[in-house]
Image (cartoon, rainbow, N blue to C red; front, side):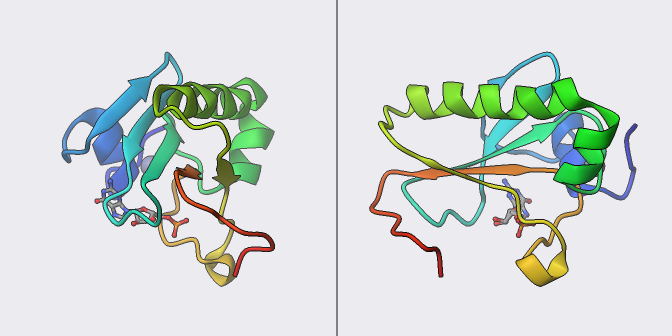
Length: 114
Ligand code: 5GP
Ligand code: ZN
């Protein structure tokens, strides 16, 4: 359930430092190292899955927990609105293949995204 070569598994384990802002039994939320907005937090499951679909297939409750913890993060940041994004696959911009939910807010985000 953990991949020794995975960056986010290492962050979950505490072996790579990150600014953790919230945790639950199933998930960990930490600030993105290259923020795209005043609030940019990544919420990840403690277990290793390559993307959101793989997590949903293996652990539906774990998928829901990401959204629940993301809402707690947004509330803690004082956001009245925010965007949740799962980049899925390299073509969509996914660069880290451990499921992660981007929580983005604190500026006018616009729609549709670029
Ligand atoms: P993706 O492009 O896969 O959807 O998102 C990966 C995110 O992880 C990117 O926004 C990137 O800035 C972030 N990231 C990459 N390496 C690190 C790291 O070592 N620490 C943290 N906190 N974020 C990282
Ligand atoms: Zn991992």
